[in-house]
Each structure stands twice: as C-alpha cells, then as structure tokens.
Image (tube, rainbow, N blue to C red):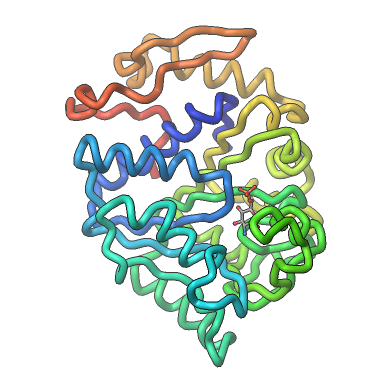
Length: 299
Ligand code: GLP
C-alpha cells in the first residue's frame, strides 16, 4: 500500500492527478466512482480542471459502487443523483456512460448480475475511488461480508445508518437498510484503488485497513491483498497508524529524492511538524505543460 499522510486539499489534488494522468493516457478509461463526503474534494478538483484546463471525460466510462434500495428516482440521496450533482453535471462525461445499480429494479438479483457483466464488458475498472466507513466497510460491504463477494443485495449495519443519518435529516431510521453494492471481490478486480479518509472518526478503520489482520470484521483489510492501493489520509485519519513515521519518511523521500522523476515537478515542498507538504495543484497555466507529474505510481 502506498500511504500518504497529507492535508485534505492535497489528497484531493493527488487523487485528481492520478485520474488526470489516466484520462490523458487512455481517454476511454473506466473510472470507479464513490459517493459519501470523502471524494467530494476530488470531484471539485476534476470539475475545476475540466473548466479551466479542458480536461475531458468525453470518452471515459464510469461505474458507481453502491446504491440504496427503494429511494424515489428523484431523491437527492439516491447515489445516481448524488454523483450527477457532485461530478457528472460539472464535467463532459456523457450520462449514458455513467452506470449505477438500479435500486428500484423489479429483479434486484438479476440487476446485480448484469452489473457485474457490464463492468467486465467495459474491460474492468482502471481506477476506483473509495471511501471507508467508520466500521471498516468498503462501498456497502459491512463487517461480516465475504472477502470474495460480488455485486449483491445486502443490509446496512446500524453504525452505517447512524453515520449516514446526516444525509437523511439526522434520522438513522430514514436511511434505507437494504442496499446494493459491488462486492469486495468486484472492487479488488479494479486495477488501481485510491482510498480517501479524513478525520479522527476514520482513524481506527484506517489503522485496521492498512495494518490490521485481514478478516471479515474489518472488510477494508482485504485491500492488503491488492497490488496497487493508494491511501490518502489526513492527520486525524492517520492518528492510529502504527507505522505513520515510516509512511511519512517514504513519502518525503518520494518528494525529495534526486533521482525521482517527480522532483522536477515539485512546485514547492515544505516540512511542517515532520510532515512534508507540497504544493500539489499546479496553477492552471502550468497544467498544459508536457511531462505530467507522477506523484503516485500509475496503474
Ligand atoms: C458510505 C458509502 C461508501 C462511502 C463510505 C464513507 O456509506 N456507501 O461508499 O465510501 O460510506 O462515507 P464518507 O465518505 O461520507 O465518510
């Protein structure tokens, strides 16, 4: 795992950098999109790059991770509507290339199976954005999920209902318990996984995900078996990482190593309280320059 402890703003830029490099290299790339608050900064940054620098998603494809079952089509928290509002409406990704699970399907099981087929037909997900739940869930794979699970109908834990209550008038009982989700096995098939987590509430889940024993109690621990995971966390979410100093040193080396291909691209790097902060978002004019940075290993 590539673990970067940095600010929330810089996390958003690093994730956007990885997506931009992918899209410029392969305009028809398949993106995996997550909802929740964690990726919102990334979507803001992609929208900015689209508006100011012409980053185009016209040929790309996107698959959503999960969906609530039974919400009205026009419900603001239906994930299909969330991703439309937060990202798709702000860039040029054609709506018919954005795929989501149908929480109102008359045959939910078949619709899950078809979703798996659609991902496979698109050639698999190149880069999957992920958040992590406070209980260690990925998408809606709650503790107890099979680590090899595929897209399916499942049930939310009470903890997730409480965590997501803010989106439903602060009422945990208003959060639908029945949901559809890509399985952990489905997520693990994506070529590059980029996980974002911020705040103290995520600290235990992040520690378990990166350093704990792999098991169903903390579903995100399955990521330890993936060959290419990037974890972008702030100080709060990193606060229980036992190897935090090592991750910081590794990242500082990446930013400052004379042989590193990234160095020429560093606009500014400062060390504050032992943490290296770099100015990761280049000003719009410099984004057109050739030789994009490769802060994170590409997929
Ligand atoms: C939600 C979503 C997940 C999301 C996670 C974290 O329930 N289904 O896909 O990544 O929980 O949410 P947040 O980013 O708001 O903390």
